Amino acid sequence: MSRYLSDTKIVSGMVMVFCAFLCMVTGMFFLPYNPDAIDIPHKLQFISFAHPFGTDNLGRDLLSRIMTGYRISFFIGISASCFGLMAGGIAGMLGGYFGGKTDAVVGKLIDIQMAFPGILLALMLAAIAGTGMHTTVFSLCIMSIPRFARVIRSGFIRYRNSFMVMSARSRGASALRIMIHHILPNIHNDILTTFSISFAYAIMNETGLSYLGLGIQPPSPSFGRMLNDAQNYIMTSPWFILFPAIAVAIPVAGMMLIGDGISSLKNGT
Image 1 (cartoon, rainbow, N blue to C red):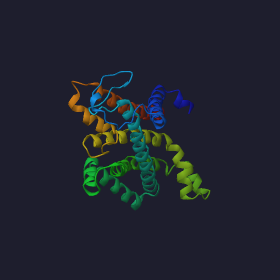
Image 2: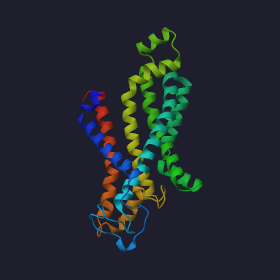
Image 3: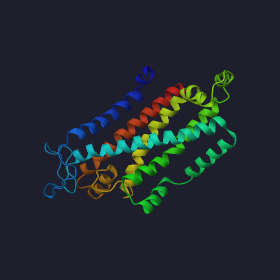
Image 4: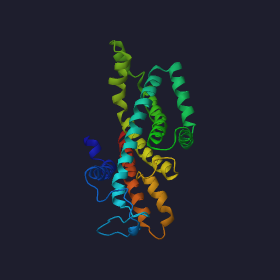
């Protein structure tokens, strides 16, 4: 932890993510306005004391919608990353440690899923189950599996024949104990890097899907929907698109910086 806190990239990323998280937590207890309250007479208002970030095309307070939108972004980022870590981690551990046919099956499944575009998966799920929160979360969770599986599989392949593993086997340690207590701790930097990057990609993908109308549906204040609503007013009301764009960029850039910093420490650069 002391090494992480001494790295400028990691600290900068943590500050950015903490600011977004603090904004989300504050919005859970206090919101300046109802984020879904329509007020047509006050639409597209410029920055003011009453509306620090202005209002949108329906008169809704942008600050309140951004604070609420962070709930969706963090929920999806955490859900997709945790699901990918669990599902992809189990597949990568089994394939990387046991090798042979098990590794061949895991490798083929990873290759098949990576060859299947995420947007196409989202379109298919939307056509079958309809658009909305559940479909978006499920598609992003599935999309995050190969990233973790490949990283953890390569780490297990690297260590499965190492001296520490052979020593543990000679003492009668089980395969599960070797995987959890001997190999996993040695690839924790790879896992943390992948988790932070997966978190950032989940937020970006959700924003893209919602922008295309395939993700979170109105009136939920998704950043993608905000950007879609604001695109027709970019010249006349630039704050309408500027603040949601900055809001979604802060946690994404923060998690990317954390992942890059951890990766640099791992490589000794």
